[in-house]
Length: 211
Ligand SMILES: C[S@@+](CC[C@H](N)C(=O)[O-])C[C@H]1O[C@@H](n2cnc3c(N)ncnc32)[C@H](O)[C@@H]1O
View (cartoon, rainbow, N blue to C red):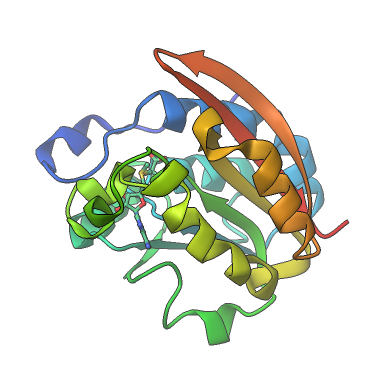
């Protein structure tokens, strides 16, 4: 299945929104590879944490179609505005919420999310940078680049539906095998589905499900 890259040339207008980069494009490539698997579970609810420009949710909406609802959260309010614009330009309806991970949405979404997506802030930084705000939210991952994603992991079993799939972007420094082990402890089976070297980063996409 060949899905065109969504239109995103307007993103440059938003100074503090993460512009699609190598990690984003590897994520799109991995989702395209998984298109048959994703379609086979007939998703009804899709949730992206940290949607940034909105290009990832727009892309998955092109894979799945209009029968699903697309929820996008971001801590950065400008990202929500940009996500909505990206959806609109590409004729996709994206429902955006400015929040920390999924706060305020979890009761409604509990065990209802069929596809969960997160390209987290994964860069190794001093811990205090995580709270700097704006565009820093996009990359500052603290110790081992794991501090933000580690806070999110316990929420995954609460969000995923029985057939749900979770996709995560990581770099080598995050220790992908340790992440797979950590989520195994939460009842999720994981694997690396794509890896690519981009400059100094070795990026991977991980996929998790309940079985
Ligand atoms: C690496 S960017 C990814 C943006 C986009 N999804 C992409 O793939 O290009 C990470 C995004 O996560 C957001 N973010 C960071 N911490 C968050 C949190 N605790 N809750 C919600 N969003 C968060 C950032 O503001 C940023 O937009």
